[in-house]
Length: 138
Image 1 (cartoon, one colour):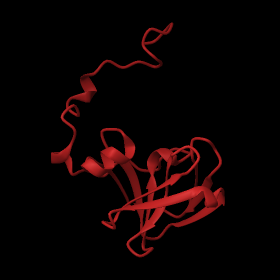
Image 2 (spheres, helix red, strand yellow; image 1 turned 45 degrees about the vertical axis):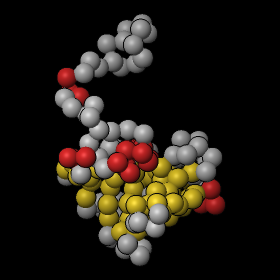
Image 3 (cartoon, rainbow, N blue to C red; image 1 turned 180 degrees about the vertical axis):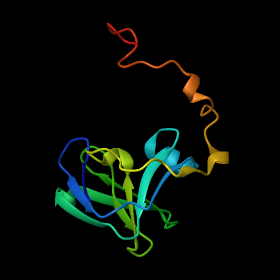
């Protein structure tokens, strides 16, 4: 399979050829800081190949305190982008950066004990199809 992805501003685009072996939702403090959300949603592959279609020069990669906690992003809009980890043997793709449907369901939540205190029973929170208060918002 070939999967297309890009950043928010569209200046960086990529494709992944191959399959994803795992999909994890990580709740660790670093992933919450990276995303500004309850968890990171990353796809993992040891066999797929990443090819930048445009904007590779705009991609920066940050290895937090040389800890192996790695994030790549667009320098124009800040969107999370794929990167290679573990000496280039593991491709990590932020699921939200894909421009197509994600082909697999998450395998699980990792570092769940370290989740945010407000990350409880979110399935019970009211849902809206657009901003609350807009016409036809339910």
